[in-house]
Image (cartoon, rainbow over all chains, first blue to last red):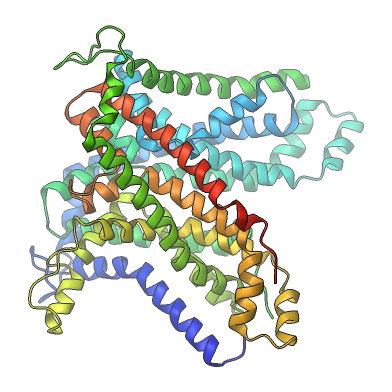
Length: 269
Length: 283
């Protein structure tokens, strides 16, 4: 793009819009290092005490622990169930296939508060409303479409002649799956795992419905904190969140090119 | 092991999960037709009385507010997202492209609570914007931004921006740059060739983006809950109040059911309204 009036105006506009995206994160960072309990702009003194408070606050610690438990189970279930099901959808035909696929990807369209209230009522019917199981099942339903999509992309990119070659050399279906298909699915399974972990760790709305005091995850603990207190510990916690997510995204981009995963091609001209 | 035994091993867990999910969704359907017993989670006999709840003026206002917020958010996100997506496709430096991409999609991964909380710090009465305007002497009193509909829309735009940018950038990147070059070599300025070539060719992305943002906004909960503060309510907030605060599962079920149907109808209407865009020609 040549440097002329139009392109300068365009890049100025883009910088302004990027500024809009960044503004809350920047303001939160300023607040997090504010020394006082009352938030003022600009802060009079700087300190790290809110980071200490955020890390030692009991509800946050327990919430983090619960979130990690839920995240691990959700990722394992979502990737194994979703990965296997994506293979079935791609390779097999059976009656009710469209219905099953439609149902298991419908959480993209159904609001998460609806899914939350559904599982809350169901859990109450079977007296399991205080268990981790209901939180984990809800999370698996919510992240499954993303996992399946990631696995699909890598299944489609497998050259079918590789599987045919293995089969013609005498490998049984199970051996073909184990030695050819599964290793080639690894990138898809890995990005599915990443999606499942991040989405589950951040899930809030449905979790608010299905979690109890004992199974409260970190986002729910944070929500309860915001409603009761106004000190900057939440800002400190948010800054840690932002930094963690940015590092994960930058690493993913470095390892496997986010633009390619999201199917955005660049154009030079 | 044969191929069909692999099939059974692989499909059974998905069927079990789907059954659990179907059971949860059926609970909503069944509870919407049961009587509420005040002070108890156990429901009474069968009734269709619950559905009359939807006709109360309060509920009609919530539904129309929700539709308005979704529409405004989808359109505003399009205006904010288009230049970013365009920049993403056209920027030459791969470092700059990665930076813009990461900044633009981070809000999708930071979680509803963190994101909404950080906007509280920006928009509050003693928040960043008011403090800056006061210190510059532009205003004498803090401007009330919290608990207003425009503030809720602003924060929702921040939330739906990543998906809009991804959808638009995918659509724009599929346009052959030769078209733009051709129109410029025929004497069209950059604005003219953008308006007559790039924009119409990205129409499928525009439609997909608007509809996706609309549907995403519909299920918003944390943003209207914290930024709207009970003054701006969307359907999710009312479901929560009725379901969790007053334990009236039958009414909450009716409302979620109506919410799902409402989204399906609105998304269908939007598809229909946006159909002319699909047949747009370059000219």
